[in-house]
Structure formats: C-alpha cells, structure tokens
Image 1 (cartoon, rainbow, N blue to C red):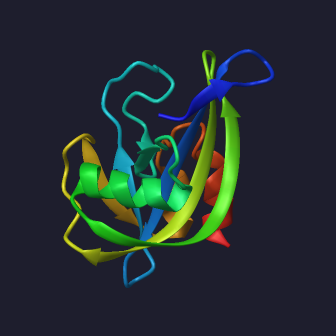
Image 2: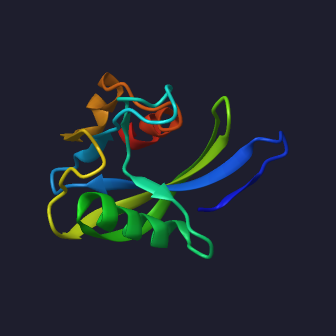
Length: 139
C-alpha cells in the first residue's frame, strides 16, 4: 500500500478507482459494506483500491478490478485526481476510465453492484471522496 505522511500529518493513501463503462454508457457503482470508516460504510463507490509500491494508477486499477470483481479491463485515460480529507487520513483518488475486456463483475468484497447512467449517479449515496467525480462524469 502506498501511504505517506501528508503536510498535515495525516497519512496520505493513494487509491485508484475504475470508472467502468458498459456499451450503453452506464457506469458501474459498487456498495461498500461495514468497514473501518463510518463515513464510507454502506456507501457507493467506484471500484478499485490502494496502489502498491511501484504501481501506477492504471496498473493498480487493473489488479484491483481483477481481484475484487473478477474482470479484466483496459485502463484508459485518467479522468481526474481528487484529494479528500477524512478525519484520520487523506485519500488521493486516481479515477481511471475503464472498459471490460473479459468477465462479468461479481460480488466478493462489495455488498452491491449497479450499472447507473451518469445523470442518475447523484441519486446514490456515494463515499465523500467519490462525490467530486460525479459532475465530471455527467458532462
């Protein structure tokens, strides 16, 4: 996991999230379960995970989506890099546009999966770090 001290003393966690589009332009959203951070419990997110040492955001998203959803994806353009400060850490979220090459997403670490057209994304309760991405996807 790539975690480093930030200027404010909180750990900075680097995360890569896949913005996965289907052929109709819908985006895959995944619902988290109960975890260590009450701000994200049972909220929706774009799937992905922490960068490992030496990994790029694109490498990490391909690995994480294989591990978490059982799919192989292309990792395309970087949509945005968002920083969000939670009470105990800062997340740097690298949002990468992806398309599925092989497999169908299945639940392993999430409690729900949903294909959502971009204009409908704001209707879901997203994790705070993911919310700044929504307007970028609706354009």
